[in-house]
Image (cartoon, rainbow, N blue to C red; front, side):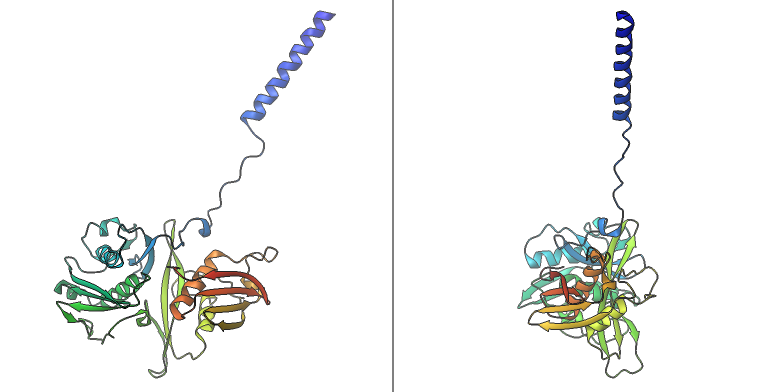
Length: 318
């Protein structure tokens, strides 16, 4: 009898050990896979430097890179090298993007004074194709003014200021700043009273998300922040490959400029989760980049139905 009882205890212990082993090797609750939403797969921080390159759809696009140089003029020269076809730096740009300055273009001089960067290029700059000449100016202006110390640029070729585009002969301002526009789209019925408003959209190349600025040229006399919200919440957008995560039901109920801050009040359609009061990072970043290109403000406060949600510092946003 005692022997039979011992055998039962041994069998029970072995069975329990087997159950524990099965539970250890095959856990009931597997960890959830990490979300692959855009907000977790693309870089939008201001830690890295910024360059504007042509994407596969020939949009001048905002791309993050890391520069080796520290001084502003040295950074500018490094950025120009990335923008130039055939350089060793150009070989390092991300897949799906391409430089725009003609091959063999050299920088003969570079001087920064009171926010203005003068860059003297070799004559090869003028060999740019007619199709790309406007985008070349846009890429140079937006790339170089992404550096905090540079407000505008003056382009020279062999010591002479470039006053017009090589092919179309379109007159160029001097100096040139971001008011020149980028990836311009026209919606005008008169050449008088036109305004330029730049909005930032998302685009995707494989698993890499990046921003594409589009300048709308129109006769719309509305405040630019109204145009920005209207355009970003509109559907369809200019091209199917450009995206905006701003809900089409979003309404800008009020806005107020206070010194260097812009206060925006929306309806709750801007929220990604009404219960948590969250706004998608893709939404705020697109709006913030658009505001920075159109206004001289340092921060943006987001409110929903007069309830403050979040404030963003725009200094160093690039």
